[in-house]
Length: 604
Image (tube, one colour):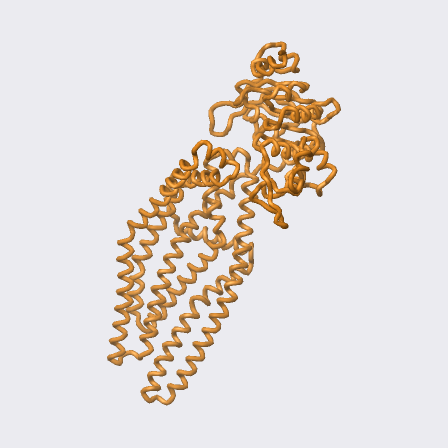
Protein backbone atom coordinates (compact mmCIF):
# COMPACT_ATOMS: atom_id res chain seq x y z
CA UNK A 1 0.00 0.00 0.00
CA UNK A 2 1.32 3.39 -0.93
CA UNK A 3 2.44 5.59 1.90
CA UNK A 4 0.00 8.40 2.70
CA UNK A 5 1.41 11.77 1.76
CA UNK A 6 1.84 14.46 4.35
CA UNK A 7 -0.91 17.02 4.52
CA UNK A 8 -0.08 20.44 3.15
CA UNK A 9 -1.28 23.61 4.85
CA UNK A 10 -4.01 23.94 2.20
CA UNK A 11 -5.13 20.35 2.83
CA UNK A 12 -5.24 21.04 6.56
CA UNK A 13 -7.41 24.08 5.93
CA UNK A 14 -9.73 22.15 3.62
CA UNK A 15 -10.04 19.30 6.11
CA UNK A 16 -10.83 21.61 9.02
CA UNK A 17 -13.35 23.49 6.88
CA UNK A 18 -14.96 20.18 5.91
CA UNK A 19 -15.44 19.15 9.55
CA UNK A 20 -16.75 22.60 10.47
CA UNK A 21 -19.16 22.71 7.52
CA UNK A 22 -20.73 19.31 8.22
CA UNK A 23 -20.89 20.08 11.95
CA UNK A 24 -22.59 23.40 11.26
CA UNK A 25 -25.11 21.79 8.88
CA UNK A 26 -25.90 19.11 11.47
CA UNK A 27 -26.10 21.40 14.51
CA UNK A 28 -26.07 25.07 13.37
CA UNK A 29 -25.37 26.48 16.83
CA UNK A 30 -22.50 24.08 17.48
CA UNK A 31 -19.83 26.08 15.66
CA UNK A 32 -20.76 29.38 17.31
CA UNK A 33 -20.97 27.73 20.72
CA UNK A 34 -17.58 26.06 20.18
CA UNK A 35 -15.91 29.35 19.22
CA UNK A 36 -17.38 31.07 22.29
CA UNK A 37 -16.23 28.12 24.38
CA UNK A 38 -12.70 28.40 23.00
CA UNK A 39 -12.46 32.00 24.15
CA UNK A 40 -13.97 31.23 27.56
CA UNK A 41 -11.65 28.26 28.13
CA UNK A 42 -8.58 30.22 27.14
CA UNK A 43 -9.24 33.67 28.61
CA UNK A 44 -11.06 33.03 31.90
CA UNK A 45 -8.11 31.22 33.55
CA UNK A 46 -5.74 33.98 32.38
CA UNK A 47 -8.06 36.59 33.88
CA UNK A 48 -8.27 34.65 37.15
CA UNK A 49 -4.47 34.34 37.24
CA UNK A 50 -4.03 38.07 36.61
CA UNK A 51 -6.32 39.11 39.45
CA UNK A 52 -4.83 36.47 41.76
CA UNK A 53 -1.40 38.00 41.09
CA UNK A 54 -2.77 41.50 41.69
CA UNK A 55 -4.30 40.26 44.96
CA UNK A 56 -0.89 38.95 46.11
CA UNK A 57 0.76 42.28 45.26
CA UNK A 58 -1.97 44.29 46.99
CA UNK A 59 -1.77 42.16 50.13
CA UNK A 60 2.01 42.61 50.23
CA UNK A 61 1.57 46.36 49.85
CA UNK A 62 -1.10 46.41 52.58
CA UNK A 63 1.24 44.48 54.85
CA UNK A 64 3.90 47.11 54.06
CA UNK A 65 1.61 49.90 55.26
CA UNK A 66 -0.26 51.05 52.13
CA UNK A 67 -3.71 52.01 53.49
CA UNK A 68 -5.46 51.77 50.12
CA UNK A 69 -3.99 48.40 49.17
CA UNK A 70 -6.35 46.40 51.41
CA UNK A 71 -9.45 47.59 49.57
CA UNK A 72 -7.81 46.82 46.25
CA UNK A 73 -6.99 43.30 47.47
CA UNK A 74 -10.63 42.68 48.42
CA UNK A 75 -11.86 43.93 45.06
CA UNK A 76 -9.33 41.72 43.26
CA UNK A 77 -10.48 38.70 45.33
CA UNK A 78 -14.12 39.38 44.46
CA UNK A 79 -13.34 39.76 40.76
CA UNK A 80 -11.26 36.56 40.72
CA UNK A 81 -14.03 34.70 42.57
CA UNK A 82 -16.66 35.99 40.13
CA UNK A 83 -14.56 34.84 37.18
CA UNK A 84 -14.11 31.48 38.89
CA UNK A 85 -17.88 31.15 39.35
CA UNK A 86 -18.46 32.03 35.70
CA UNK A 87 -15.86 29.43 34.71
CA UNK A 88 -17.54 26.73 36.83
CA UNK A 89 -21.00 27.54 35.47
CA UNK A 90 -19.64 27.58 31.95
CA UNK A 91 -18.10 24.13 32.35
CA UNK A 92 -21.43 22.66 33.48
CA UNK A 93 -23.35 24.15 30.56
CA UNK A 94 -20.56 23.35 28.14
CA UNK A 95 -20.45 19.68 29.18
CA UNK A 96 -24.14 19.19 28.41
CA UNK A 97 -24.12 21.13 25.14
CA UNK A 98 -21.02 19.29 23.92
CA UNK A 99 -22.63 15.92 24.69
CA UNK A 100 -25.75 17.00 22.77
CA UNK A 101 -23.76 18.27 19.80
CA UNK A 102 -21.56 15.16 19.81
CA UNK A 103 -24.64 12.94 19.65
CA UNK A 104 -26.18 14.88 16.75
CA UNK A 105 -22.95 14.93 14.74
CA UNK A 106 -22.12 11.29 15.41
CA UNK A 107 -25.64 10.19 14.47
CA UNK A 108 -25.57 12.25 11.28
CA UNK A 109 -22.16 11.04 10.11
CA UNK A 110 -22.65 7.36 10.90
CA UNK A 111 -26.11 7.42 9.29
CA UNK A 112 -24.60 8.88 6.13
CA UNK A 113 -21.83 6.27 6.21
CA UNK A 114 -24.23 3.33 6.51
CA UNK A 115 -26.59 4.67 3.84
CA UNK A 116 -23.75 5.29 1.39
CA UNK A 117 -22.13 1.89 2.00
CA UNK A 118 -25.42 0.09 1.36
CA UNK A 119 -26.01 2.07 -1.86
CA UNK A 120 -22.69 1.32 -3.61
CA UNK A 121 -22.47 -0.48 -6.92
CA UNK A 122 -22.52 -4.16 -6.01
CA UNK A 123 -19.14 -4.97 -7.56
CA UNK A 124 -17.44 -2.71 -5.05
CA UNK A 125 -18.24 -5.13 -2.21
CA UNK A 126 -15.87 -7.59 -3.90
CA UNK A 127 -13.17 -4.97 -4.47
CA UNK A 128 -10.25 -4.98 -2.03
CA UNK A 129 -9.39 -1.31 -2.62
CA UNK A 130 -12.94 -0.37 -1.70
CA UNK A 131 -12.76 -2.59 1.40
CA UNK A 132 -9.48 -0.95 2.50
CA UNK A 133 -10.91 2.51 1.91
CA UNK A 134 -14.06 1.59 3.80
CA UNK A 135 -12.08 0.36 6.82
CA UNK A 136 -10.14 3.61 7.03
CA UNK A 137 -13.24 5.74 6.42
CA UNK A 138 -15.22 3.83 9.05
CA UNK A 139 -12.45 4.45 11.59
CA UNK A 140 -12.80 8.18 10.97
CA UNK A 141 -16.62 8.17 10.95
CA UNK A 142 -16.77 6.45 14.34
CA UNK A 143 -14.77 9.31 15.89
CA UNK A 144 -16.05 12.18 13.76
CA UNK A 145 -17.90 13.83 16.63
CA UNK A 146 -14.78 13.65 18.77
CA UNK A 147 -12.76 15.17 15.92
CA UNK A 148 -15.03 18.20 16.18
CA UNK A 149 -14.32 18.34 19.92
CA UNK A 150 -10.60 17.90 19.32
CA UNK A 151 -10.60 20.75 16.82
CA UNK A 152 -12.15 22.93 19.49
CA UNK A 153 -9.58 21.74 22.02
CA UNK A 154 -6.73 22.37 19.58
CA UNK A 155 -7.98 25.89 18.98
CA UNK A 156 -8.54 26.44 22.71
CA UNK A 157 -5.03 25.30 23.61
CA UNK A 158 -3.57 27.38 20.79
CA UNK A 159 -5.43 30.48 22.04
CA UNK A 160 -4.25 29.66 25.57
CA UNK A 161 -0.65 29.44 24.35
CA UNK A 162 -0.87 32.67 22.35
CA UNK A 163 -2.58 34.75 25.04
CA UNK A 164 -0.29 33.36 27.74
CA UNK A 165 2.71 34.44 25.68
CA UNK A 166 1.10 37.83 25.05
CA UNK A 167 0.35 38.21 28.77
CA UNK A 168 3.97 37.36 29.58
CA UNK A 169 5.33 39.72 26.92
CA UNK A 170 3.49 42.68 28.49
CA UNK A 171 5.74 42.48 31.56
CA UNK A 172 8.54 40.06 30.60
CA UNK A 173 9.08 40.04 26.81
CA UNK A 174 12.35 38.08 27.01
CA UNK A 175 10.74 35.32 29.07
CA UNK A 176 7.88 35.14 26.55
CA UNK A 177 10.39 34.62 23.73
CA UNK A 178 12.27 31.92 25.65
CA UNK A 179 9.04 29.99 26.35
CA UNK A 180 8.12 30.13 22.67
CA UNK A 181 11.52 28.72 21.66
CA UNK A 182 11.29 26.02 24.35
CA UNK A 183 8.05 24.48 23.00
CA UNK A 184 9.22 24.15 19.39
CA UNK A 185 11.26 20.91 19.81
CA UNK A 186 8.34 19.14 21.46
CA UNK A 187 5.99 20.20 18.69
CA UNK A 188 8.35 18.87 16.01
CA UNK A 189 8.83 15.52 17.74
CA UNK A 190 5.10 14.99 18.24
CA UNK A 191 4.45 15.71 14.58
CA UNK A 192 7.03 13.09 13.58
CA UNK A 193 5.37 10.51 15.82
CA UNK A 194 1.90 11.22 14.44
CA UNK A 195 3.17 10.82 10.86
CA UNK A 196 4.64 7.44 11.75
CA UNK A 197 1.35 6.38 13.36
CA UNK A 198 -0.64 7.34 10.25
CA UNK A 199 1.70 5.34 8.00
CA UNK A 200 1.52 2.39 10.39
CA UNK A 201 -2.29 2.40 10.46
CA UNK A 202 -2.63 2.42 6.67
CA UNK A 203 0.05 -0.23 6.21
CA UNK A 204 -1.62 -2.69 8.57
CA UNK A 205 -5.27 -2.56 7.41
CA UNK A 206 -5.13 -6.19 6.23
CA UNK A 207 -3.63 -7.36 9.52
CA UNK A 208 -6.43 -5.74 11.52
CA UNK A 209 -9.08 -7.10 9.13
CA UNK A 210 -7.74 -10.66 9.48
CA UNK A 211 -7.72 -10.27 13.25
CA UNK A 212 -11.30 -8.98 13.19
CA UNK A 213 -12.47 -11.96 11.11
CA UNK A 214 -10.76 -14.38 13.51
CA UNK A 215 -12.36 -12.72 16.55
CA UNK A 216 -15.79 -12.91 14.89
CA UNK A 217 -15.33 -16.64 14.17
CA UNK A 218 -14.16 -17.32 17.72
CA UNK A 219 -17.19 -15.59 19.24
CA UNK A 220 -19.85 -16.90 16.84
CA UNK A 221 -21.75 -19.71 18.67
CA UNK A 222 -22.54 -21.61 15.46
CA UNK A 223 -18.83 -21.89 14.65
CA UNK A 224 -17.55 -23.13 18.01
CA UNK A 225 -18.45 -26.80 17.47
CA UNK A 226 -16.39 -27.02 14.26
CA UNK A 227 -13.50 -25.11 15.82
CA UNK A 228 -13.36 -27.52 18.74
CA UNK A 229 -13.82 -30.68 16.68
CA UNK A 230 -11.03 -29.66 14.29
CA UNK A 231 -8.74 -28.51 17.11
CA UNK A 232 -8.64 -24.97 15.75
CA UNK A 233 -9.35 -23.01 18.94
CA UNK A 234 -5.77 -22.81 20.18
CA UNK A 235 -4.43 -22.29 16.64
CA UNK A 236 -6.76 -19.34 15.99
CA UNK A 237 -6.11 -17.85 19.42
CA UNK A 238 -2.37 -17.97 18.72
CA UNK A 239 -2.89 -16.51 15.23
CA UNK A 240 -5.02 -13.71 16.68
CA UNK A 241 -2.31 -12.91 19.22
CA UNK A 242 0.33 -12.97 16.49
CA UNK A 243 -1.62 -10.52 14.33
CA UNK A 244 -2.32 -8.28 17.32
CA UNK A 245 1.35 -8.25 18.27
CA UNK A 246 2.39 -7.55 14.69
CA UNK A 247 0.04 -4.58 14.59
CA UNK A 248 1.13 -3.13 17.93
CA UNK A 249 4.84 -3.97 17.86
CA UNK A 250 5.75 -1.50 15.12
CA UNK A 251 3.80 1.27 16.83
CA UNK A 252 5.69 0.62 20.07
CA UNK A 253 8.97 0.69 18.14
CA UNK A 254 8.05 4.17 16.87
CA UNK A 255 7.26 5.27 20.39
CA UNK A 256 10.52 3.85 21.77
CA UNK A 257 12.62 5.55 19.08
CA UNK A 258 11.38 8.95 20.23
CA UNK A 259 11.87 8.49 23.99
CA UNK A 260 15.29 10.19 24.02
CA UNK A 261 14.14 13.09 21.88
CA UNK A 262 11.06 13.57 24.02
CA UNK A 263 13.22 13.63 27.13
CA UNK A 264 15.41 16.36 25.62
CA UNK A 265 12.33 18.44 24.71
CA UNK A 266 10.81 18.00 28.19
CA UNK A 267 14.10 18.95 29.79
CA UNK A 268 14.26 22.17 27.77
CA UNK A 269 10.72 23.08 28.83
CA UNK A 270 11.38 22.27 32.49
CA UNK A 271 14.63 24.26 32.46
CA UNK A 272 12.82 27.22 30.92
CA UNK A 273 10.16 27.17 33.63
CA UNK A 274 12.67 26.83 36.49
CA UNK A 275 14.93 29.52 34.99
CA UNK A 276 12.01 31.91 34.64
CA UNK A 277 10.92 31.46 38.27
CA UNK A 278 14.47 31.88 39.53
CA UNK A 279 14.87 35.05 37.48
CA UNK A 280 11.56 36.48 38.76
CA UNK A 281 12.45 35.53 42.35
CA UNK A 282 15.77 37.40 42.05
CA UNK A 283 13.93 40.41 40.62
CA UNK A 284 11.51 40.39 43.57
CA UNK A 285 14.33 40.00 46.09
CA UNK A 286 16.04 43.00 44.51
CA UNK A 287 12.69 44.86 44.63
CA UNK A 288 12.74 45.24 40.83
CA UNK A 289 9.37 43.45 40.55
CA UNK A 290 6.34 43.35 42.89
CA UNK A 291 5.60 40.12 44.79
CA UNK A 292 2.56 39.33 42.65
CA UNK A 293 4.78 39.00 39.59
CA UNK A 294 6.05 35.65 40.90
CA UNK A 295 2.52 34.23 40.94
CA UNK A 296 1.79 35.85 37.60
CA UNK A 297 4.98 34.56 35.96
CA UNK A 298 4.64 31.09 37.46
CA UNK A 299 1.04 30.75 36.30
CA UNK A 300 1.58 32.27 32.85
CA UNK A 301 4.67 30.17 32.10
CA UNK A 302 2.90 27.10 33.41
CA UNK A 303 -0.15 27.85 31.28
CA UNK A 304 1.97 28.60 28.22
CA UNK A 305 3.94 25.36 28.56
CA UNK A 306 0.80 23.40 29.47
CA UNK A 307 -1.09 24.95 26.58
CA UNK A 308 1.77 24.10 24.22
CA UNK A 309 1.93 20.53 25.49
CA UNK A 310 -1.82 20.06 25.16
CA UNK A 311 -1.79 21.80 21.80
CA UNK A 312 0.90 19.42 20.55
CA UNK A 313 -0.86 16.36 21.94
CA UNK A 314 -4.26 17.35 20.54
CA UNK A 315 -2.76 18.42 17.24
CA UNK A 316 -0.96 15.11 16.82
CA UNK A 317 -4.28 13.32 17.24
CA UNK A 318 -6.16 15.67 14.97
CA UNK A 319 -3.32 15.42 12.47
CA UNK A 320 -4.03 11.70 12.08
CA UNK A 321 -7.78 12.24 12.09
CA UNK A 322 -7.64 14.94 9.44
CA UNK A 323 -5.50 12.68 7.25
CA UNK A 324 -8.16 9.99 7.63
CA UNK A 325 -10.81 12.56 6.72
CA UNK A 326 -9.62 12.40 3.13
CA UNK A 327 -10.24 8.65 3.13
CA UNK A 328 -13.74 9.32 4.48
CA UNK A 329 -14.43 11.96 1.84
CA UNK A 330 -13.03 9.72 -0.89
CA UNK A 331 -15.26 6.86 0.26
CA UNK A 332 -18.34 9.10 0.35
CA UNK A 333 -17.59 10.07 -3.26
CA UNK A 334 -17.71 6.46 -4.50
CA UNK A 335 -20.51 6.08 -7.08
CA UNK A 336 -23.85 4.76 -5.90
CA UNK A 337 -26.14 2.43 -7.82
CA UNK A 338 -28.09 4.21 -10.51
CA UNK A 339 -31.65 4.83 -9.43
CA UNK A 340 -32.91 6.07 -12.79
CA UNK A 341 -34.43 4.22 -15.69
CA UNK A 342 -37.86 2.96 -16.58
CA UNK A 343 -39.98 1.68 -13.70
CA UNK A 344 -41.63 -1.71 -14.03
CA UNK A 345 -45.36 -1.66 -13.27
CA UNK A 346 -45.85 -5.43 -13.51
CA UNK A 347 -44.00 -8.67 -13.97
CA UNK A 348 -42.56 -9.04 -17.52
CA UNK A 349 -44.10 -11.51 -19.96
CA UNK A 350 -40.64 -12.52 -21.18
CA UNK A 351 -37.14 -12.51 -19.70
CA UNK A 352 -34.64 -12.86 -22.53
CA UNK A 353 -31.02 -13.73 -21.85
CA UNK A 354 -29.11 -12.72 -24.99
CA UNK A 355 -25.53 -13.85 -25.49
CA UNK A 356 -24.64 -12.94 -21.91
CA UNK A 357 -21.00 -13.08 -20.84
CA UNK A 358 -19.54 -11.93 -17.55
CA UNK A 359 -16.25 -11.65 -15.76
CA UNK A 360 -15.76 -10.19 -12.30
CA UNK A 361 -13.96 -6.84 -12.00
CA UNK A 362 -10.16 -7.04 -12.03
CA UNK A 363 -10.20 -10.66 -13.28
CA UNK A 364 -9.24 -12.02 -16.69
CA UNK A 365 -11.50 -15.09 -17.01
CA UNK A 366 -15.14 -15.14 -18.05
CA UNK A 367 -17.43 -16.87 -15.54
CA UNK A 368 -20.26 -16.94 -18.10
CA UNK A 369 -19.83 -17.07 -21.88
CA UNK A 370 -22.48 -16.49 -24.57
CA UNK A 371 -25.44 -17.66 -22.47
CA UNK A 372 -28.83 -17.37 -24.20
CA UNK A 373 -32.34 -18.55 -23.29
CA UNK A 374 -35.83 -17.19 -22.67
CA UNK A 375 -38.10 -17.45 -19.62
CA UNK A 376 -41.84 -17.01 -20.21
CA UNK A 377 -44.10 -15.63 -17.50
CA UNK A 378 -45.31 -18.47 -15.29
CA UNK A 379 -42.65 -20.88 -16.56
CA UNK A 380 -40.76 -23.09 -14.09
CA UNK A 381 -37.02 -23.17 -14.83
CA UNK A 382 -34.23 -25.17 -13.20
CA UNK A 383 -30.53 -24.36 -13.66
CA UNK A 384 -28.08 -27.15 -12.93
CA UNK A 385 -24.35 -27.72 -13.20
CA UNK A 386 -21.28 -28.64 -11.23
CA UNK A 387 -19.87 -26.24 -8.63
CA UNK A 388 -18.21 -23.29 -10.37
CA UNK A 389 -20.33 -23.61 -13.50
CA UNK A 390 -21.60 -20.03 -13.08
CA UNK A 391 -25.10 -20.67 -11.70
CA UNK A 392 -24.99 -18.29 -8.72
CA UNK A 393 -23.20 -15.66 -10.83
CA UNK A 394 -26.08 -15.81 -13.31
CA UNK A 395 -28.53 -15.09 -10.47
CA UNK A 396 -26.52 -11.99 -9.58
CA UNK A 397 -26.85 -10.80 -13.19
CA UNK A 398 -30.54 -11.63 -13.38
CA UNK A 399 -31.29 -9.70 -10.18
CA UNK A 400 -29.35 -6.66 -11.43
CA UNK A 401 -26.60 -6.78 -8.80
CA UNK A 402 -24.07 -6.97 -11.63
CA UNK A 403 -24.35 -5.95 -15.28
CA UNK A 404 -23.18 -8.35 -18.01
CA UNK A 405 -19.81 -7.58 -19.53
CA UNK A 406 -21.18 -8.90 -22.82
CA UNK A 407 -24.68 -9.38 -24.19
CA UNK A 408 -27.81 -8.32 -22.29
CA UNK A 409 -30.77 -9.41 -20.19
CA UNK A 410 -33.98 -8.00 -21.64
CA UNK A 411 -37.41 -7.65 -19.98
CA UNK A 412 -40.21 -7.34 -22.53
CA UNK A 413 -37.87 -5.68 -24.99
CA UNK A 414 -36.17 -3.32 -22.49
CA UNK A 415 -32.59 -4.07 -21.36
CA UNK A 416 -32.38 -4.67 -17.63
CA UNK A 417 -29.64 -2.01 -17.34
CA UNK A 418 -32.20 0.58 -18.51
CA UNK A 419 -34.78 -0.39 -15.88
CA UNK A 420 -35.06 1.07 -12.40
CA UNK A 421 -33.46 -1.68 -10.34
CA UNK A 422 -35.67 -1.04 -7.28
CA UNK A 423 -38.83 -1.56 -9.33
CA UNK A 424 -37.30 -4.81 -10.70
CA UNK A 425 -36.51 -6.05 -7.20
CA UNK A 426 -40.17 -5.58 -6.22
CA UNK A 427 -41.01 -8.30 -8.74
CA UNK A 428 -38.58 -10.78 -7.18
CA UNK A 429 -38.49 -13.15 -4.21
CA UNK A 430 -34.87 -14.31 -3.96
CA UNK A 431 -33.38 -16.85 -1.59
CA UNK A 432 -29.60 -17.24 -1.78
CA UNK A 433 -27.47 -20.06 -0.41
CA UNK A 434 -26.10 -17.66 2.20
CA UNK A 435 -29.38 -16.17 3.37
CA UNK A 436 -29.70 -13.66 6.20
CA UNK A 437 -30.37 -14.82 9.74
CA UNK A 438 -31.92 -11.99 11.75
CA UNK A 439 -30.91 -13.17 15.20
CA UNK A 440 -31.69 -9.83 16.83
CA UNK A 441 -35.44 -10.32 16.47
CA UNK A 442 -38.06 -13.08 16.73
CA UNK A 443 -39.20 -15.70 14.21
CA UNK A 444 -42.28 -13.68 13.27
CA UNK A 445 -40.17 -10.73 12.15
CA UNK A 446 -37.72 -13.05 10.40
CA UNK A 447 -40.61 -14.02 8.12
CA UNK A 448 -42.22 -10.56 7.98
CA UNK A 449 -38.93 -9.06 6.74
CA UNK A 450 -39.80 -10.59 3.35
CA UNK A 451 -42.04 -7.57 2.76
CA UNK A 452 -42.06 -4.65 5.19
CA UNK A 453 -43.81 -2.30 2.75
CA UNK A 454 -47.09 -3.03 4.57
CA UNK A 455 -48.08 -3.92 8.12
CA UNK A 456 -47.74 -7.56 9.15
CA UNK A 457 -50.48 -9.73 7.64
CA UNK A 458 -51.07 -12.71 9.94
CA UNK A 459 -53.00 -14.78 7.40
CA UNK A 460 -50.32 -14.24 4.77
CA UNK A 461 -47.65 -15.17 7.30
CA UNK A 462 -49.39 -18.44 8.24
CA UNK A 463 -49.72 -19.43 4.57
CA UNK A 464 -46.03 -18.70 4.01
CA UNK A 465 -45.09 -20.93 6.94
CA UNK A 466 -47.22 -23.74 5.55
CA UNK A 467 -45.70 -23.46 2.06
CA UNK A 468 -42.21 -23.64 3.62
CA UNK A 469 -43.09 -26.67 5.76
CA UNK A 470 -42.25 -24.53 8.81
CA UNK A 471 -45.55 -24.45 10.73
CA UNK A 472 -45.02 -27.62 12.73
CA UNK A 473 -41.55 -26.85 14.08
CA UNK A 474 -42.39 -23.18 14.79
CA UNK A 475 -45.43 -24.19 16.85
CA UNK A 476 -43.18 -26.42 18.95
CA UNK A 477 -40.77 -23.59 19.81
CA UNK A 478 -40.95 -22.29 23.43
CA UNK A 479 -42.75 -19.08 22.42
CA UNK A 480 -43.76 -20.05 18.89
CA UNK A 481 -43.50 -17.07 16.52
CA UNK A 482 -42.29 -14.83 19.34
CA UNK A 483 -39.22 -17.02 19.96
CA UNK A 484 -35.82 -15.44 19.35
CA UNK A 485 -33.66 -17.67 17.10
CA UNK A 486 -30.55 -17.21 19.26
CA UNK A 487 -29.65 -18.32 22.78
CA UNK A 488 -27.85 -15.00 23.19
CA UNK A 489 -31.12 -13.04 22.95
CA UNK A 490 -34.18 -12.67 25.17
CA UNK A 491 -37.37 -10.61 24.97
CA UNK A 492 -38.57 -7.83 27.29
CA UNK A 493 -40.12 -10.40 29.63
CA UNK A 494 -36.84 -12.26 30.05
CA UNK A 495 -37.81 -15.18 27.79
CA UNK A 496 -34.63 -16.58 26.30
CA UNK A 497 -34.21 -17.58 22.67
CA UNK A 498 -33.35 -20.98 21.21
CA UNK A 499 -30.86 -22.22 18.64
CA UNK A 500 -32.30 -23.32 15.26
CA UNK A 501 -30.90 -26.15 13.15
CA UNK A 502 -29.73 -25.54 9.60
CA UNK A 503 -32.91 -27.06 8.18
CA UNK A 504 -35.10 -24.97 10.46
CA UNK A 505 -33.31 -21.81 9.41
CA UNK A 506 -33.84 -22.74 5.74
CA UNK A 507 -37.57 -23.17 6.35
CA UNK A 508 -37.77 -19.77 8.04
CA UNK A 509 -35.89 -18.23 5.09
CA UNK A 510 -38.22 -19.98 2.63
CA UNK A 511 -41.23 -18.70 4.57
CA UNK A 512 -39.77 -15.19 4.31
CA UNK A 513 -39.36 -15.71 0.56
CA UNK A 514 -42.97 -16.91 0.20
CA UNK A 515 -44.28 -14.08 2.42
CA UNK A 516 -42.84 -11.63 -0.08
CA UNK A 517 -45.33 -13.10 -2.57
CA UNK A 518 -43.54 -11.69 -5.62
CA UNK A 519 -44.47 -12.88 -9.13
CA UNK A 520 -40.95 -14.20 -9.80
CA UNK A 521 -39.35 -16.64 -7.34
CA UNK A 522 -35.60 -17.28 -7.51
CA UNK A 523 -34.13 -20.01 -5.32
CA UNK A 524 -30.41 -20.81 -5.09
CA UNK A 525 -29.94 -24.17 -3.32
CA UNK A 526 -32.90 -23.37 -1.04
CA UNK A 527 -33.43 -26.77 0.60
CA UNK A 528 -29.97 -28.31 1.00
CA UNK A 529 -30.51 -28.82 4.75
CA UNK A 530 -34.18 -29.84 4.58
CA UNK A 531 -35.20 -33.50 4.64
CA UNK A 532 -36.12 -35.07 1.30
CA UNK A 533 -39.84 -35.55 2.05
CA UNK A 534 -40.37 -31.93 3.12
CA UNK A 535 -38.35 -30.75 0.12
CA UNK A 536 -40.50 -32.84 -2.23
CA UNK A 537 -43.68 -31.31 -0.82
CA UNK A 538 -42.27 -27.77 -1.16
CA UNK A 539 -41.32 -28.23 -4.81
CA UNK A 540 -44.47 -30.11 -5.69
CA UNK A 541 -46.25 -26.87 -4.77
CA UNK A 542 -43.76 -24.65 -6.56
CA UNK A 543 -43.75 -26.63 -9.81
CA UNK A 544 -47.47 -27.47 -9.75
CA UNK A 545 -49.35 -26.44 -12.88
CA UNK A 546 -51.72 -24.27 -10.86
CA UNK A 547 -48.80 -22.16 -9.59
CA UNK A 548 -48.72 -19.29 -12.10
CA UNK A 549 -45.62 -17.64 -10.63
CA UNK A 550 -42.36 -17.71 -12.56
CA UNK A 551 -39.92 -19.98 -10.71
CA UNK A 552 -36.17 -20.15 -11.33
CA UNK A 553 -34.28 -22.55 -9.09
CA UNK A 554 -30.74 -23.85 -8.71
CA UNK A 555 -30.34 -27.25 -7.12
CA UNK A 556 -28.20 -30.39 -7.06
CA UNK A 557 -31.16 -32.60 -6.12
CA UNK A 558 -32.86 -34.48 -8.92
CA UNK A 559 -36.18 -34.52 -7.06
CA UNK A 560 -36.09 -30.70 -7.06
CA UNK A 561 -35.37 -30.08 -10.74
CA UNK A 562 -37.11 -32.97 -12.55
CA UNK A 563 -40.53 -31.32 -12.43
CA UNK A 564 -39.32 -28.08 -14.06
CA UNK A 565 -40.74 -27.05 -17.46
CA UNK A 566 -37.23 -26.41 -18.74
CA UNK A 567 -33.86 -27.45 -17.33
CA UNK A 568 -30.74 -25.51 -18.33
CA UNK A 569 -27.41 -27.27 -17.91
CA UNK A 570 -24.33 -25.07 -17.41
CA UNK A 571 -20.74 -26.23 -17.72
CA UNK A 572 -17.73 -23.91 -17.48
CA UNK A 573 -20.01 -20.90 -17.88
CA UNK A 574 -21.76 -22.13 -21.04
CA UNK A 575 -25.10 -23.75 -21.74
CA UNK A 576 -24.38 -27.27 -22.93
CA UNK A 577 -27.90 -28.71 -22.73
CA UNK A 578 -31.50 -27.69 -22.14
CA UNK A 579 -34.86 -29.44 -22.12
CA UNK A 580 -37.23 -31.38 -19.89
CA UNK A 581 -36.06 -34.01 -17.44
CA UNK A 582 -37.22 -36.83 -19.72
CA UNK A 583 -35.42 -35.38 -22.73
CA UNK A 584 -32.15 -34.78 -20.92
CA UNK A 585 -32.12 -38.09 -19.06
CA UNK A 586 -32.64 -39.96 -22.37
CA UNK A 587 -29.91 -37.95 -24.04
CA UNK A 588 -27.27 -39.42 -21.70
CA UNK A 589 -25.23 -36.20 -21.80
CA UNK A 590 -23.98 -33.75 -19.16
CA UNK A 591 -27.30 -33.77 -17.29
CA UNK A 592 -27.14 -37.54 -17.03
CA UNK A 593 -23.54 -37.32 -15.81
CA UNK A 594 -24.41 -34.81 -13.08
CA UNK A 595 -27.35 -36.84 -11.75
CA UNK A 596 -26.04 -40.30 -12.64
CA UNK A 597 -26.08 -41.69 -9.11
CA UNK A 598 -29.54 -40.32 -8.39
CA UNK A 599 -30.90 -41.58 -11.74
CA UNK A 600 -29.51 -45.05 -11.09
CA UNK A 601 -31.27 -45.14 -7.71
CA UNK A 602 -34.59 -44.33 -9.42
CA UNK A 603 -34.01 -47.02 -12.07
CA UNK A 604 -33.28 -49.56 -9.35
